[in-house]
Length: 452
Image (cartoon, rainbow, N blue to C red; front, side, top):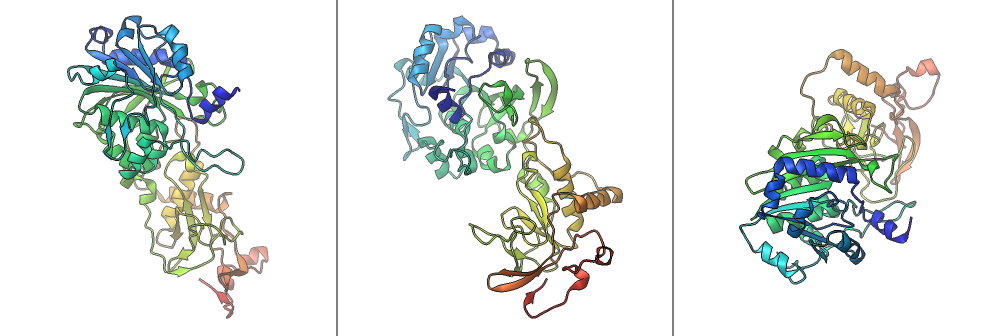
């Protein structure tokens, strides 16, 4: 992979596969007829045009109404030969013409023709875009960090408005500026992107404050169709057409997307409607208030002593800890049971009162088969009661699961004190296995031990 393509992959800039670019135009023409687009009433702007794959199948009669901008001058030079009648220009949509301190746009770098069209309130707009997908994050020891990939003036504004984790997503930054720039105009947003802004619990503030959208139509396909993306860990890429207006909000929309195979053919449909925070499965179980400190664990037998934000609290009646981090299916590996508090956020104390729900959550989260299509789906509160057989199945499965990280240990020294960790989840009587470790029936209370 050359340096140019390596940079684009790092930023999550993937060339739209032509088969899906062509398919997207079919969906657009179901919303806005080709005759209407040719009438001169519409302008089309792609703010992340790259090498023009999105526009490859666009009717040439529309080039005179087409604006294509991208951050890379090389891409503009390449496209000038293909789209001679279009208005092409180098532009950093996340940084140029933005006065962050005043939260306004000051058009000094835009072509005069585009400025004139933006000031014409009679024109309608089609924003047709496949923005970068990169997310700013601190990488692990074996990978390069993308900590600074999303730094921009738009991100600063989103931070100031407390829009949460969406500000780390480059495509969400594009959506934010488009929303602010075009809200008082008649506009359709036709966008290729990840589905996080629809599905993710962490993007609720973004949905509430930015996504004034009415769903028109759309489809979804696997990211494995893009060059230079992982074939082993693909994710869903959506193409959705939204009508943007203060009258709408994405939370009220019935979002049903066509699922396309690698040939662009319809396989089935999938509901992508927004799930509210209060409907998430982790809200189903009561979190009991913690009252005392205990030994925090990072795994079955490893005490977590160093690090930030270590959780080392338990409640009265504590019998174990349920790790249940996140709410989507791709977080299922962050689900386990411990005999002491699991050290990171996202865990809760198990008691006799919430035991059944804890076992159901553990089993359900662990047994669902995750694939590229359902990875962003949310675990939600069940809408029916469960039979005793189902509850017992979840309990038995949890006891023998590899994600049952419960253990029994003596003489655990932590914070200048000795502790005994009792395994309340061991499925056999100690007399059957002739073990002299710390099961509940063997609690010899010595002065050195702080027992539960």
